[in-house]
Length: 190
Image (cartoon, rainbow, N blue to C red; front, side, top):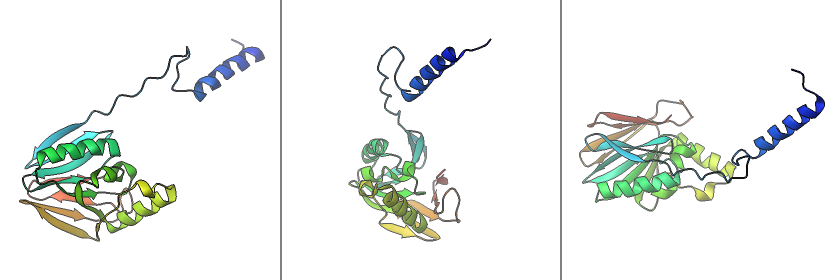
């Protein structure tokens, strides 16, 4: 099948127009608004679990002595997680711990900030978080770490002992592995 110049230009123009407006339909119908992310709390063991939503996972501990979140996703899903943790733990949220500085792990810190006592990051994570958000011009929309650690960190919340470990660069230059010792659960970033 041969294509003449007129057919080629017509087809190419339509394809280019379609590519310029990927969310619109050809017959003028508006694109549908995406559904809000489906979120869920899942228990693992000993008051430790995961919260899923918007393509990621927030680890959590929630018991009578307080709550902890590991990673913060994005502001909208973080807000839902905050509400769920506050229902699960009457003493409130002690900590948010970020496993690394990428926005899908730190973007929700701003939603946690009013409800949380401290944000914890490995020191290289904290440095990279600040540098990248300042460079992107989004520093004003961030909530940064109050507590930073080098090789390791630990804290008790109720009868659970939590550890943060830095084994060197992995996915980023400041990746932390968070262990819930008594529950025998580990939470890592990407």
